[in-house]
Image (cartoon, rainbow, N blue to C red; front, side):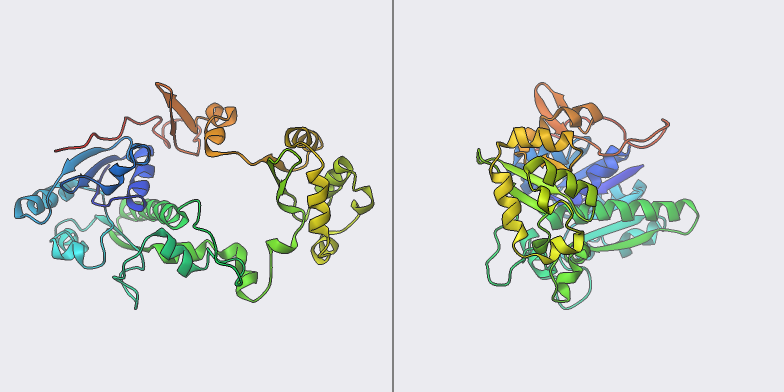
Length: 339
């Protein structure tokens, strides 16, 4: 089915990438000069693979007319403008639904189409800040996030919502308007930190769960939670046998234990400790740099990463069996810039 994507940068294009990976025919509509994300060639290539592109000046009547023509046979329309812009261009949900009542129309914006922040400007760091993702310690200024969580999460949610709406269309229930607020989506991803919302603490008091430095300066992630057998195995490997019997509650209530774990890990080179912990069936992992992760054999084996002419491309993360549906496989390259 055809998807017309009027969005730019990351959230909307990521949503339509996911739909392309499931077999959709995605037409990317770019303004004169192209999607601003073209300034980041690797990112643009990754998030726009498998799409075709048209360059339209939607400020001109000819451009708007072509835009209206494109949405005629679209199962899904995606836009990422501020609220009200699509309607001013004659490409809002009301315009599309009037002629095509089965259309699924997805609007992705920073704060949604309604509310006191609707229409306010922003980018990922703003949405993470307002959703409570950035801050961990109220006494420290947090660092700029490594990943654009609000961008990626809202793109994923938009694709998920579009698929749900298409299912409703297939059942004869008509099209849908989907209002995706990036800040709302980011807030829903704070569910694991609800204890913090009530004034409690979660991960900072779990010494068995964290990232620790090894003797060679490399980092190791330890992912033990309530599992007593994992904790016992860890203690046996690092020589903390006297603490192997500490229960989950005792571990969480001992403020000194994190330093004890840190000291124990710091006495080992990372790869040696990692090998011993993994042999003991303890959930421990090397903290990989991005290029190390992309080059890992496990991702190549599963097809999550594939290489074309030596360049790594990240693909669809789920596998579907038996055949006849699901991921469409490696996609064609992103569309070239148009003049």
